[in-house]
Image (cartoon, rainbow, N blue to C red; front, top):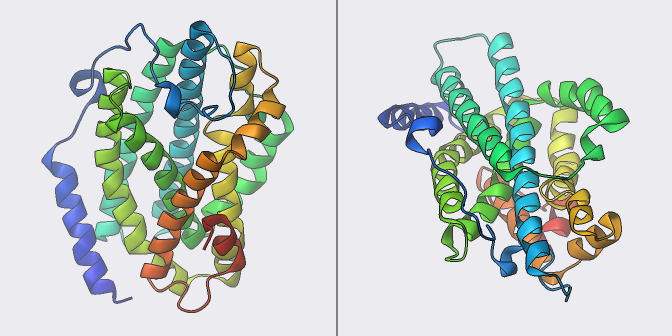
Length: 296
């Protein structure tokens, strides 16, 4: 793709980022309400036919939100590490892409500060062994460094990591049964993440055209696997169900097979795939992993 039109798009994104800098402690100040924060039909277990008490539904809503916000903090830290690595190894600090990366890092730090404040208010009781122990060390020592060295895979990772919460936040923000403060937070976050998605869609074709075969292989085969893992395992991690007395892994396995959850996962995958095909990365036949997870 021609770099000049891309540069003009990035310059427009830089200008848009300057129009209003939102400080969450000031502009998105507020507190959660006392009731059930997420309506029954947006809980992950909707469709399982469980006979939950009002207290269990109240607790599960808080635990699922806490899991989503925690995953968001971890993802945004990974994204910021990727941008910092690219800037540290980049050749031209005057490039508008460099400037936009700084804008995005600033916005992500503000999002994470807000999510941390919400976690304090939610007071989750869950444990999360997924991000501790051997797996956590393996991700930090092997997976993350490998990702940072592959710019196209990082862009696709960003697209996957932004599209999943964007869809979930859209459902929450638009539902009248969602806690008003949660709806406000989601609207704020989605507005800024829309620019982040636009930036990733703009740069991924440049990175893909100039990258290594291992990076391209990761875009075709590894990123779709990550998308499934993030949607199924990280957004609502299994041990949230333990907090209301349900078997964590058995419940999680039932949840991930629900037709509604399968369709939501496919919808996220189709959004990412549309971005990849729209930039010419898959000009011919779409790789099998992407066809499988998107249901196309």
